[in-house]
Image (cartoon, helix red, strand yellow):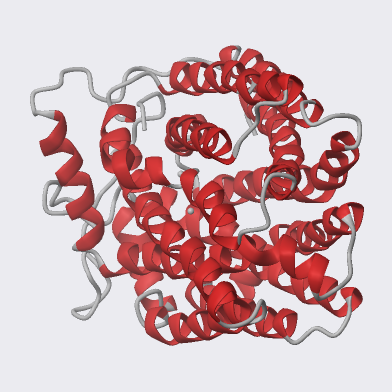
Length: 436
């Protein structure tokens, strides 16, 4: 690994710790203001709306901008933003609309940071597939450990000191992350001369994903998953309190159980992919996620619920290493920002629907109903996307992306090259610019 990766890893680790603090604090803050599941769904969904409104355009901008600068500016802006709800909490004027607005702006900052980071990493590692998988495993492991394993209990504990404390802690983490990212090595601009309009470039990136079956399968997987997971997340705090009898600190521990599984899944992702093949590994983890949520819905006590979330977290952790690593290995450098943002936009477009679905099902039927519905969707998605991300299709895409290989493996394999870049090859540009 190059020296710069250590600084990038440290920056994302620090920021993920702050995210974990806020992840536990925000729903608990919302619960102090309302018990209405639909109001909670508004706060949850607000953070995903920027991806729906600006996702593809954001990717096109990242393919024009300096990616390192985009990351540290986004972090600095989010640090300043968190001062607003912190001040409102101190002054006693915190409200659901304010929390929703802050969640929206944090999501906008996350759009630019995540897209730029995903596009920056292949440049830093010279697009080496083995290094990308190892790097994503370490990044995902650190993110899972901090945002789920350490952060949520810390957020719950900090909330007892004051409603502004966890928000200020997250702001500090963004400042530290911005300083570290600013010290990373700079890369040349992705596109030296922009000759097409922003809309045309954004459309080219979206077309590249939709006309390739493997990339579309990789994008559909988190899209359907987000409907399910947001339906669960929207009611999880209420489910833990009302059905499992858990207090504030117990809810933080429940999220920690999921993070523990995610840490294990990220650690074994590479071995799982080598043993089963990338495509089969992705299918298996999807099935495990559905079965785990089914177990959570039927959980009679906090211990079974924690085990179910740990298993689900392990499957998610492995998926979020294997899928992005594959995408970064096969997508040309100049399209990476747009392809990454298009894939993420599909996932985020589904997320508000999942949040409102969870709130509606809980209000209309029962608090467990969103969990059963989520499990059914995950299992159905497994069957639909399995053939799109098969081992044969993955191997053909990797061969096509190799610099000396211009042909795809077989007649039934979709070409990896998009309509605006007919050649599937990736040029050998070690210093050239080039994330679910």
